[in-house]
Amino acid sequence: MHWRTVSEFKHEGRTMLVKRLGADEGPQFVLVHGIGVGTSYYHRLARALARTGGVHVVELPGMGRAPRPESPMSIGEFADILSTYLIDADVADPVLVGHSMGTQIVVEASLQHPDLFRRLVLMGTVVDPRERSAVRQGLRLLQDCLFFETPPSNVAVLSDYLRTGVRWYAATLPAMLSYRTEDAVRRVTAETVVVRGERDPISRRWWAERLAEAIPAARFVEVPRKGHVVMYTATDEVVDAIVGLAKVREPGLEPR
Image (cartoon, rainbow, N blue to C red; front, side, top):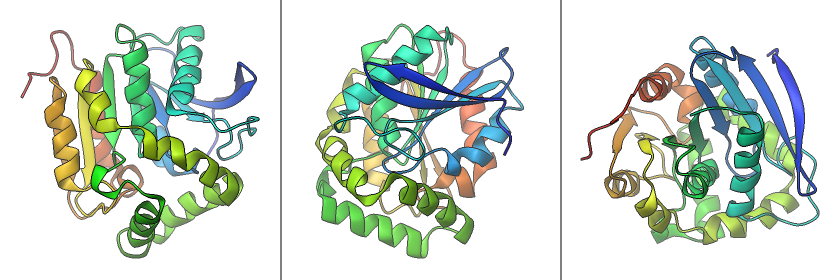
């Protein structure tokens, strides 16, 4: 895949990679990956969204090919570097799209700057409070890879896991497990779409629906027969949900 630009963004001694695709005009989509991965599993989604507007795909500090910071980062610190980049780059009214741990980061960014980040897409949300342990999450990830993903989606995920490394994944995991998404979303005012694959064992239906119900301006989308990496295996369906949100104008989605 040929990115329009690839750049480093430095903030408080940490470095985030930013890959750009599409135009400066029109809707701007910001894709934030989950724990241990990078941009690889977003390639299909980025290409599709670039037909509508501009795409900013970030690689968080220590993940994928991004340089490793001196110490593990909290969800708040990940959200801060993301927010600072978007403010410095003057990315106006973006749609923040998070997957897995990335959902926690975009939620936190919207709480830090509610007037700037008013549209969220949460895909494969974590962490299910009934399974808030490293062992449970590892087993669910294995289940997803073995039974609900395709070989290409597994290659995209595992290639970035290898780049990140087991030690840094393990060092970051406590931040993901300790962040209580179920509490954070109750303060979200952004217009939101919660997306899950029907067969996703990590973000189960009851959990995704609970989060959608907690956000006043949110709707729930479930993609049939897909697993956790739904934006890779069902790109068209996910694009429809994201672009639909991008076209929302005030007062926005009707509360449920």
